Each structure stands twice: as structure tokens, then as C-alpha cells.
Amino acid sequence: MSRAEELGPRAESAGTVDLGAPATRTGERAPNAPRPNPLWALALFRSELTTTLRRWRTLALLGVLALIPILIGVAVKIETSDGDGLGGGRGGDGQGPAFFSQITNNGIFLVFASLAATLPVFLPMVIGVITGDAIAGEAGAGTLRYLLVAPAGRTRLLLAKFTTSMAFCLIATLIVALSGLVTGALLFPLGDVTLISGITVSFEEALLRALGVAALVALSLVGIATVGLFISTLTNSGIAAMATTVGLVVTAQILDSIPQLHAIHPYLFPHYWLSFADLLREPVYWDELVKNLGLQGLYVAVFGSAAWARFTAKDITA
Image (cartoon, rainbow, N blue to C red; front, side, top):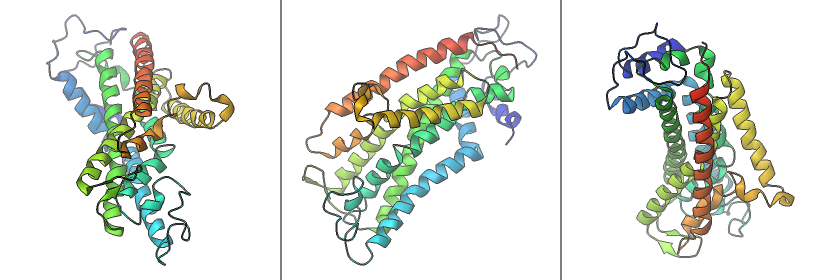
């Protein structure tokens, strides 16, 4: 799909657009432009999200995310097909990745194992690609100027891009969780779930906790999503913005794994990502969960403000 075709529905969502009218520097409504409909912002968000989800690149990335739980489930099924536990009978010794040893006992643990496997690398990389291209891709293709003409404004457009990024975080996470749940149900038994603390809960309660885990994982990604959006405002090259955002994810993960840098670990956006496991305790351990949400909120506030300051002052020449 070409950029011109993508621009069509978004231009229509903003109302009648005069392509010959120059966009103002601050993105404010032109003096003679019609006042936008109160539902305009919602329409722009809807069209932005639809445009993002229709791209072949996005569909391919989501397809890869959906495939990972299937590969994990099949690998565990093959490994345990002789009746031994995962790892040749060592499945219950606490070795190996979190939740993996429990998958054969209850398929719902494939949801948690898949999220634990994709959260450190795959999910943030996908988010980095989408958010890094949000503004820079439009600027590089020359369509950003047309999105800023009346009645569209820079603040409203940036807000639509931001909310689209947040929605994509949730969509990507739910795809991993749903793929894990379906695969787990097909390959392994389901039933009551024994939590990390040793308490057994019903399958229905475990499903609710799984939904809460997915929501926490999605919220854990909003920090890097906002950073990616900010980086996207700094350049007109979508590839450069995507590469920088993904590189930042890798760098933060490396720094977080170096013990000598423990003083800065609590300020790195991925530090508390795996704290979602605390939701699988009874009672729930809220300490690191709250710290994670607070840290992500801080990144949203700082880099969201920086993105707004940069975007509203940016010269759009193409």
C-alpha cells in the first residue's frame, strides 16, 4: 500500500482539506479553516490505527509474535512426548525459563511463558519499529505536511499517534497471550492452577489473572513506545528512527544485566518488566508492580513532553 493510499482515509477523517493551504508552524487551526467536529480526534485515532494495522509490515510483525507461542508449545510437547518432564525429567527443579516447567501440567502457563519469552526482546522491538516510524515515516514520505493542514493540528496529530502506539502495545501483547492460550489448550491439559506461592485457584480465576498479566505487560511497553515516538520526531528517516529505538532497547537490556551498574538499574525502562510474575502470587506482591507502572509513567511524562515540544516547533518542508 502506497503512502498516498494510506493518507486518503486519514485526510477524510479530518474533514474537507485544502491541500494547497500551508500548515502553520505550530499546527494551529488556520484562520479561515472550519472548526473541527468534536468527534474529529476520535476519527483521526481510528484512521491512524486502521492505517497502521493494514500495513504488510505490521501484519508480518504481529504474525511473528503469534508464531512464537506456537513454536514454544510444540517444542515443549516434543521434549516431553516420552513422558519425562521438561529438560529430561528436571522440569520441576526450578531450572530453565520461568513458567516453562509448568506448561505440561497446565496449558495456561504457556501464556505466561510466552509473555516472559517475548517481553525482553521481541515485543519491545516490534513496538520500536512501529513507534519509530510514526512521525519520521510520514515526514520522509512527504505526507506529514498534508496531515497538518486545517483542521488538523500538530498537538492533535501527535496525540493520535501516541494513542495509536498505546493501542498497538495492547494489541501486540494480547496476540501473544491469545496465541499462547489457544496453543496451550490444544496441546496440554487445562484445569485449576497452582500459583507461584503454592495456592491453587480455579481456572476461571487464573484466566482473570492472565488477562491482568497481559495488561501489565502492555503497560510495561508504554515507556519504550513513548521514547520511540520522541525519536521519531527528531528525524525524517523512518529507518533511522526505528533502528535507533530498537538499538536503545538492546542497550538498556545490556546495561540492566551488568551488576556493577546496579545504581542505574531502577531507572532503566526494562528493569521491572518481568515483575508481572508477582500477579501470580497470593497475596499479590505489589511493590515492584507499582514501581514498574510509576517508571513507565515517568518515561511517558518526560519523553511525551519532549516529543510535543519538538514536534510543535519542527519545520515541515515536505
